[in-house]
Amino acid sequence: MSKNVHETIAVAMSGGVDSSVVAGLLHSQGENVVGMTMQLWDQQRLPEVRAEGATGRCCSLDDVYDARYVAQKIGIPYYVVNFEKPFEEQVVKPFVSEYLEGRTPIPCTLCNNFIKFDRFLEMAEGVGARRIATGHYARIRYDQSSNRWQMLRSADPAKDQTYFLFGLTQEQLSRTMFPLGGMEKTAVRALAEDLGIPVAQKPDSQEICFVPNGDYAAFIDAYLKEQGVAREQAPGELVSKDGKVMGRHQGVHNFTVGQRKGIGIAASEPLYVIATDPATKRVTIGRNDDLLRPTAVVRDVNWISIEAPSVPVRAEVKIRNKHAAAPAELVRNNDGSVEVRFDEPQRAVTPGQGAVFYQGDLVLGGGWIA
Image (cartoon, rainbow, N blue to C red; front, top):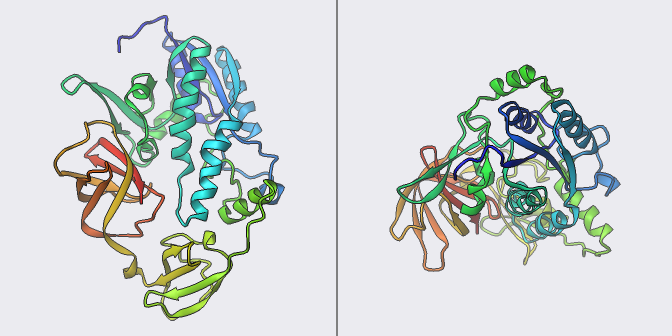
């Protein structure tokens, strides 16, 4: 894409240091910048799971205040856009339904796919911005030989966020900027100080914005209650992998594959959740070795940096954000899904999580573990 010096750039401002630096940096470079904050979730809802005074969450009213203050200090136009309804429909409700189906979803990825790089791009056009910029730690480049926009890991491995961005399309990438992708986090904070950004030392957000206390099961119960949905109590059995009943539980949605704490069974060795089955209401538990899986099937795959391959491809695959990408072979099935054949069995391959494919720093694509 050719750069037009008069082209407006809409910066998604969360109130944190990263997006604030993006806005300040682009403005200092002479770009025509507009700041926009997405209001996604009413933090006053669901008092049962509200975490008063909690830190480490995003999208609170304090964050909106911080973003507005930063925009004022920089001297750029600023807007708050309300995306609460689409956020609930496309992020919160799928999150709840996936958990009730025994899968472990990633709401941040859903938010990126359907809100931050979809609705936000549309809203940006409303203020005359053809491009958007965010504080994500990732890199984008255009490859002329393949005529594709490519995504790469960030220069700071500890902050890399490409795992949550595997759903971005070619159109979205062509209109998106990640100005921090080539920077270390320490350098970003130093730049914030240099630019006079008032949130330079603000802690990073950690928790999911609509689950501020981190208790997913409690959120699901509170949300269904608010919606007037009388979720039937679904106690079930805790069983060993050979089917022996070892105890009882109060609901499959309280468990996720790989979980160790909160199982409620005393044993001489650590026990883990190795499978959940909402249909039978059974939660299977076992040893750490029982979590190892040699393969995974990945559905709804989005190929980013390459065309969908017709032959097997070697890659490194991440099955969780903090997972060290594991060498594997990717075999594309006739239905478009991908069978991941790991060189070495991997622990806790969890249905509902993302699987993202890499070749070095290059992000080939990704999808959802079936």
